[in-house]
Image 1 (cartoon, rainbow, N blue to C red):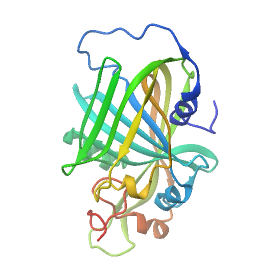
Image 2 (cartoon, rainbow, N blue to C red):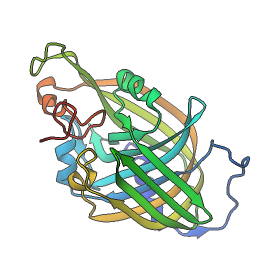
Image 3 (cartoon, rainbow, N blue to C red):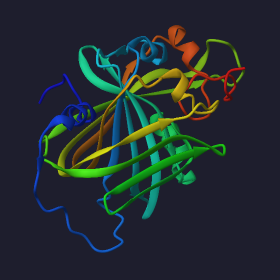
Image 4 (cartoon, helix red, strand yellow):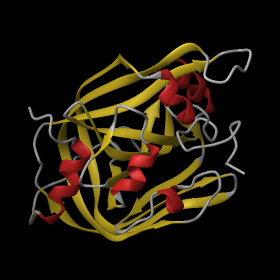
Length: 273
């Protein structure tokens, strides 16, 4: 399998594939499992992505920002969320750097950050489909910073079995607030997943990004072109989370302070002054 692309990038490229006719997956009414993910890709400026990447990661020429609105059962309850990734490569391997995952399940935010460096923070996402209408929006600190409205226009064929590689970072600054010093030096966390596609539907609509101090995606990664939107129902084939290479601690220091649990640049956990 190729290391030159990712599942999300393949979906973005697949948007121009022809529509097909086929039956969708069947499940019990009201079933939470197998909800499709709403995946939206847009293009920004490569240098904008580069400014947010820790040392060792390189922006991909595609300059893609990859947004996922989802409802996934976690701990036997629905978790509504938004994941914000950018196309980034490490030592020739295509991947994605996760800038933030806003979720409505507070119970898993802190364990996820402690164990894996997963950049989760609390946010409220509304996401639904009624007929062919699809809408989603995420609100944080009372402000809706990302919203999508669109319509399903047809089904597309599966792009086949694909791999997904994501990079998180794990570190702990020292307890006595010494600049540049850590209790646990920064490391990449490698997230490997493998998927097949159970069902794929093409969506025509618009992703709206609004300026927000706490979620500055609209200003730090402005949209230049919307590339694709899909309802994607995956088949999960594999997932591994492993501690990766060490990151130069001095070069990483400017990236250590973030807005809350995200990877957006911050000051003492708040937006920059």
